[in-house]
Image (cartoon, rainbow, N blue to C red; front, top):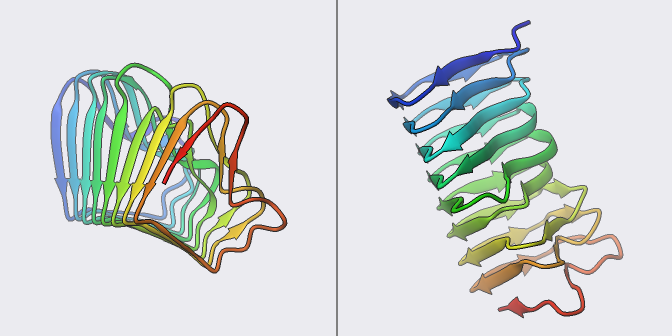
Length: 213
């Protein structure tokens, strides 16, 4: 049991290629990124870990790029969380499968200039929300299938979320998928197929809010 990160990056540049993280437990995170760090993860495989958070970023101007990587059969509070300012995050060609998250796969707190782009990625057979209070999120050419969403994705305050050329297919929604309470949701060429919403609306737009589609 170890309540420290497995890999801690602070004010440094790090590239990790073709590396596996299997069967670890007890860490508060597998990778922690602090002030001024730039991290590239490419071809990594994260499987069967039980940690508080897989990837955690703090501080000012943290940059993370994850490419062609897989995250499978994990248990965590968040898979990836950002508590940082001016953070730039790019995720491309990745797979999330079989995760059980108590909060959300991605958690980005509403700070200045946080933005995440997810491209050409797959989210399947996960239990938990996709994200928690994104400041800025753009998801392109990605698939969400056979997931169980126990809670709605609430877009409040200044949260901006855009889906472009995505598919939500065969998901089970125990509440509404999206609830607009103060944020902005944009849907472009995005399909919703065979989702079960358990008597809730797929998208809930509260008084005074608007949806772009």
